[in-house]
Image (cartoon, rainbow, N blue to C red; front, side, top):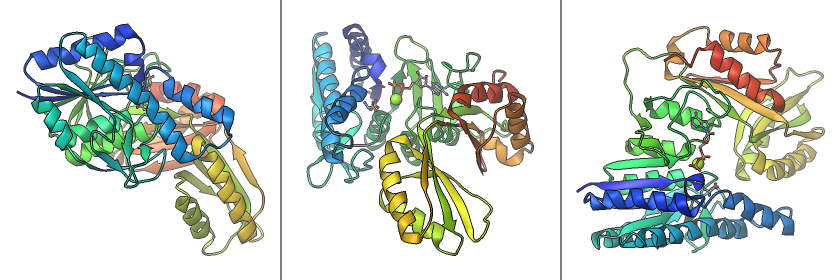
Length: 404
Ligand code: ADP
Ligand code: ASP
Ligand code: MG
């Protein structure tokens, strides 16, 4: 008997037929004698719809109430999944994040899972039931409902697989696996059969929404090998694990992020401590800063630009404006029409010429680069929003990612 964790994303449970197909797949595992935990996302675009509803009432809804609201989506889909499984004659029970013992910190909308008390989960499994857990949610020490970040059901599934020491963890979604780039934007993208945690972690944190980045972080930390598989087929998809190839290719994939905005603070006094003050305060407001560019200073002043998630723009703007007044800087400008294109590969650290090849591909498409950031295993550029998709295709072609 094995313990199997299956996760179904929103589009994989979007209609009663799809729900039933997912239910059948879970029941097949149970009938094969395995213990089965199913993690489900909200159906279809329900989370977006809930957010839109709140925004009709308030431009900046209270974060606690937003989490309470967003968690409704998953609560509905777990109950529907339990009903679908029961209709097939199999015992099943649905649990909210709190009922499943998932404790988080209190940072609403991007809470982190702290502990999982598995006693209820084991009790239900020992009764032979399929246990269906609401993805994306937990509860904090004050019993407030929290959510763990958009796309976070992946993290719920991997965290459960880790604490339950699952023998198998399958992430079912609407593509056949992890590709060298989003196959909806790059038609000749190639499906990867096996890929290293670090590469998926980079791709995910750089915008490839096929996996939630914190999910991959947890997988790597607890060595939870998992598969990303199509919910509408039998393909084994992509195995994500520790891949220790002797020779590694320089670039294994490319990603596009359209969910970031660029914030510029003009005329920042160019003196020690300015950046520390600005980014210290921004991080105290739980805004994650991604790329940072400081221009060459002139007359003792410099422009400072950085990117943040679009959802963090109101908080970033508020903080930047207050800081600017405090330190005697100039205007704060926001630019939401940007896109970030990145190439990723653990082999990059030992290959030269990656940056030149990427910049050359963009130059040939006459795409202007506004910001650049590099690490050992990734290279990212910020471009105009409309240049994002052509840039992704150009870079994918330049590195010939379609050929394995
Ligand atoms: P789910 O609802 O199942 O969690 P998501 O919409 O979050 O599904 O993620 C699946 C989507 O991720 C795909 O439809 C695809 O457009 C997108 N995607 C982005 N980058 C990649 C990639 N490198 N490989 C596969 N899919 C990708
Ligand atoms: N329903 C949540 C979202 O749309 C979580 C998820 O899909 O994983 O972000
Ligand atoms: Mg997802």
